[in-house]
Image (cartoon, rainbow, N blue to C red; front, side, top):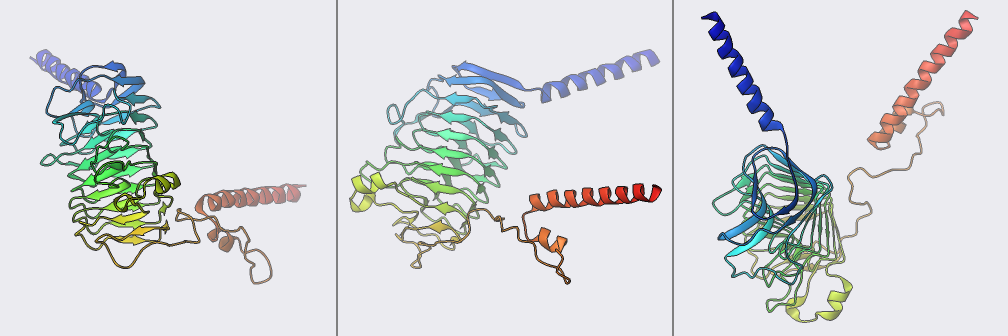
Length: 372
C-alpha cells in the first residue's frame, strides 16, 4: 500500500513538473504564417515572420494573437511583415474584415517586448481591446511599428497599460479618412506613453482633411499620461477628439507638426495641422498640456488659452545634466556631498565609489607606512 501511495505521489509530482515546464517554455516563431497563431505561453521570434493570413473572419484577422493572460511575446530583433504596402491594399472604414499584426483582446498582463519591427498591415500593427472586450495591464516596450495603413497601435477599452521606448513611424499612410496615426487610444483610461518617438504619421488627402496625428485621444479616453516623448513630422502632433478628458501631456518635445512640405502642399482650411490640435467636435474638459516644447496650436473647440508656443529651457528629460562645478566647503575645500547632490544619480554613484576607493587606498598606505 505504501509503495502504491509513493507511486501516486511520484506521478503527481511528475505531472506537475511536466505542466510547469510546458507552461514556461517559449514557443518559437519564424517564417510564413498562413493562419492566425494564438499563443498560450511565453513565445519568441527566432526569425523574421511574413504574415499571409487570409481575411476570413468578421473583424480583426491577426497574424499573432494572445490567447492567455500573464504571458509575453519577445521579438528578439526580428520583423513581422504584413501583406500590403500602404497606401495600396489598405482597409476601408466600411470593410467588415481586416488584417492586424498582433492582437490582445480580453487579456490582462501581457507583454510585447522588442527590439523588433511590426509593419505593413491593412489596419493596425497592434490592436489592444475591443468594445465589450477590454484589455488591461498590457506592456509594449522598445517596439518599432512602421508603415501600417491605419494606426501603428489602436487601443479600445484598454486600461492601466504602459507603452515605453517605442518608435511609431510613418503609419496612417492609407487610413482612407479614418482618424489614425502613431497611436490612437479610444475609450481607454489610465495608460502611460513614455519616452517614445512619433515621427511622420498621418495623411490628409481625403475629403475630411487632416484628422490624423502622432498621438490621438478619441472617445471618452481619460486619465492617460503622455510624457517625455518626441513627436514630430506628423500631420498633427497630439490631437483631441470627442469627450476625451482629464489627460496629462507634459515634458514632451512636440514640434514640426506637420512637416514643411505638407504645409506647403496642402493649404485648404480643413488640411491645417498643429503640434497640439483640438477637433471642432471636441467636448471634453480638464486636459492638461504643460511643460512641453511646442510651437503651434489649433484651438478647434478646445481651451481658449493656447498651450503653444512654449519654449522650455530644459530638454525632455527630468534629470538634466548640470555643470560639474563642485561647491566649496567652509574652509575653501570641496564639499563632496554637496557636489554629488548637484549632479545626476549615475555620476554621483560613480564618484562615491571612487571616493570610497580612494579612502581605502589612503588607509592601506598609512598602515604600510606605520609598519615600516
